[in-house]
Image (cartoon, rainbow, N blue to C red; front, top):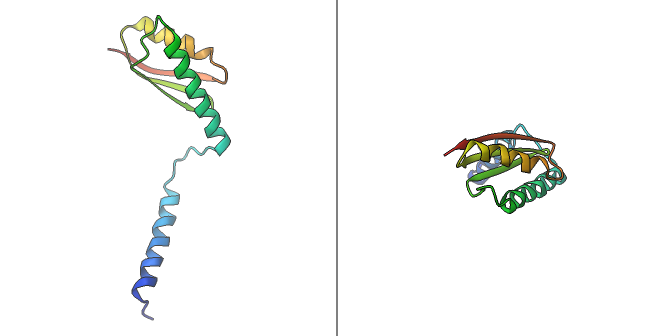
Amino acid sequence: MKLSRPITVLCMAIFLAGLTGCATSRQHQSASEYIDDTVITTKVKAALFDTHDLSSSGIHVETYHGEVLLSGFVPSASQIQRAIEVVKKVDGVKNVKSSLQVN
């Protein structure tokens, strides 16, 4: 049986959509978890920015299930420790991991 071109295209689109769905991240979050993490990220960025003895412009913040990952560059090793201290005090933060580096 020979399929017409539009049906073939439709079947291919459905097949590719299925593959794309399978290629999603292994780490799945519900919408509420994602929103909670977004709020935590915003609070962390604000806390870092409001800390006057910390150069936070080079710090990138990511949050997943309340765990905060800091990455980027700071001027000194003491700045890394200061950033971690500040982040640990933010409401909702369960753990802090740092891959900050001295620039």
